[in-house]
Image 1 (cartoon, rainbow, N blue to C red):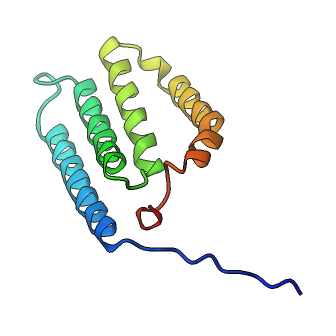
Image 2: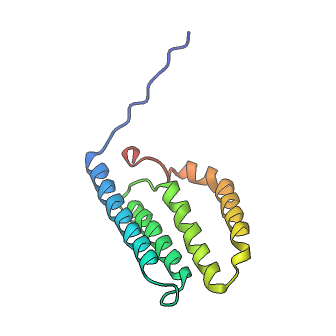
Amino acid sequence: MAEQTKVERKIDPEKVAMNKRFETVGWGLFLVMLGGFMFIPDSTIERGFWSIGIGLIFLGLNAARYMNGIRMSGFTTFLGILSLIGGIIQLLGWRSLDGAFFLIILGAYLILKPYFDKRQLFGKAEDS
């Protein structure tokens, strides 16, 4: 049998702690934004602005990770892009195109995935 070699991961506890702080702040801001969306009527602030705000929170979270040498989360990056574009679509009144834009974003991600994998931009913070 061929001998399997285990790849030893070096975990930087400082980056893990920093990522945990970023995640806590990001998800906290998300929940505050979601609560505001549910609390404030649509007549005061249009729905598109809430979606754009959520998108900016998630993209800002991943920008902070990237600038500090921590791998970004593909999940929150995807949600951020989707929320940002969805909010713009809502503000423009193109509600019937939501599904089409979702498919375009998903397809673009799949096309660009080899580039992301090569640059190792996404993954676990511990592997940074």
